[in-house]
Length: 109
Image 1 (tube, one colour):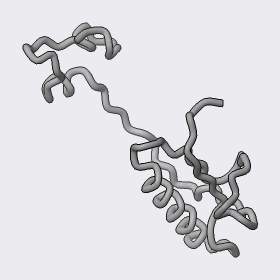
Image 2: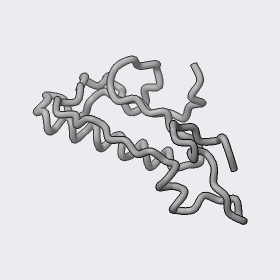
Image 3: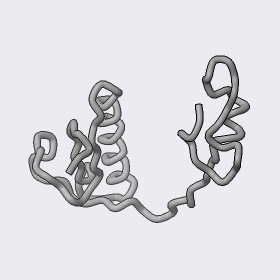
């Protein structure tokens, strides 16, 4: 393996062992972890559309999820729905769930 992982280190992207697979030691040397800033503000919560459970029209606001096919997309959509419901409840909104959309998609425009 070489050149699949880029980085500033000379060793990044290369490892040498008989199997050609990344070892835990290689992972520690090659993969660079990073931390994200904590998000302390309320999540945006827009009122849901009247027929939100069956609505497949394009949306530009709310919790949007493109479900990957055959990799747990339906499970992710269930979690997505619970988050939208819990955010509305936590913020004391006068509607039961934040606007959301989920559908299988290709990830292309």
